[in-house]
Every structure is written in C-alpha cells, then in structure tokens.
Amino acid sequence: MKVGALALALAGGAAAACPLTPDDGRLIEGDALQVAWTVAGGGAIEVGQPFELEVRACPDTAELRAVDATMPAHRHGMNYRPSIVALAPGRWRVQGLIWHMRGGWELALDLHRAGRTQTLRQAVDLQ
Image 1 (cartoon, rainbow, N blue to C red):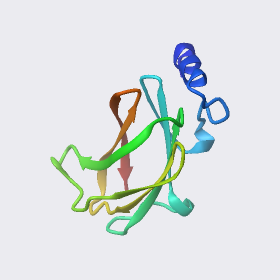
Image 2: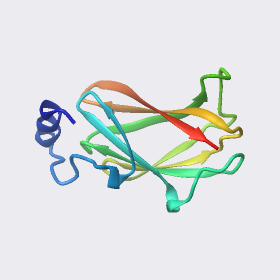
Image 3: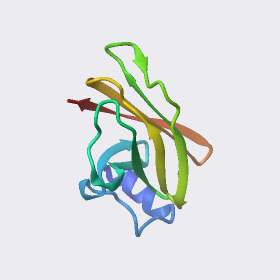
Image 4: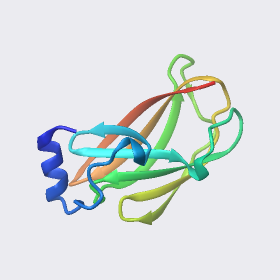
C-alpha cells in the first residue's frame, strides 16, 4: 500500500484493521481502499459447487454493494447472482457463488466509500 493511501485509511477511523495483509486473504488494492477475501470455512473453490466468500475492507467505512465473476476469455459470467450479508463494519459474507467451468475467472467487487464506487478486480485461476 502506498504511504498516502495508508495515511488516508488510518485517518478514516479504521486504524485497528488497516492495512490488510496476505494473512487476511487474497488482497486487492484500489484507490485508498483495500479488500481481502477468503473462501468461507477455509475450503477451496470447486468447479460446479456452491461456495461462499468472506470479504474484509480497509477502511471499514466502505460498503460492499455487488459481487460478480466473469470468464473474460469465454465472454460470459456466472449463471447465478450472489447475495451479500453484512457481518460487521467492513466485513461481509457473499453467498450463492458457483463457478461452473475450469479456467480463468475474474472476481469483481463493487465497494462504495465517500460518495464514490470502485470496482476492484482480481484474476482467479480455477483448476
């Protein structure tokens, strides 16, 4: 994380939770915003099987508004729309995800903070 982004995150009141580290999950960095996600229960994503994600944001004043995943090489996405359950400030559980094919997926998380929505993306290779 850049020093300016860290200072902004700390000033946002989330000093205890910021910055996130790889111990918090797979990291995605945005403009003065970090997200970490893990598969709920510590499992792995399996082809055609439902799974859930646990998502954390830094600073915790962000709001997770949408989650989606696509396969850019195939030009399609998921067949299901996941739901988001708030657990605590800056923490959510995303339910109802199913990735029905092996290959390169792109996870997209829409977060809203300070009047602005950012889409943070990360490539995920499903074997």
